[in-house]
Length: 163
Image (cartoon, rainbow, N blue to C red; front, top):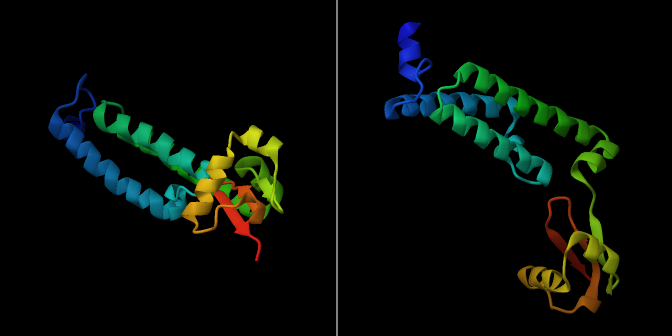
């Protein structure tokens, strides 16, 4: 196993460029396997909940590539986090209460043309943000014609216009 330690720089204080490249290759292919195990949603970036994992994994895997920390321990931590994410996703699929607690729930911003000022204030959304969404969705920019407008769990604004 000494050749392996030399190859990936276990006993070195500082890694060489080729050791970092070898580590990157190893981590890349094992991470692809982990994605198959944990599911593609793990990196889907749909909600804030889904965005946490790629952020944490990037930090952990980046350090594993450029510092002489043990690769198996790092990959073990990554696998546990990915499986935990999958477990929580399964739980939120099974129960609405868990979904509300972990992912949040949509926040009404406009109802039947009436702006819900308290919700705008609480979410730091402005009327201009709603108007921008209306333009991007191809709607006429008239708040009074909105049937429903919500700040969704993903952080995006959705607008349903009256007929």
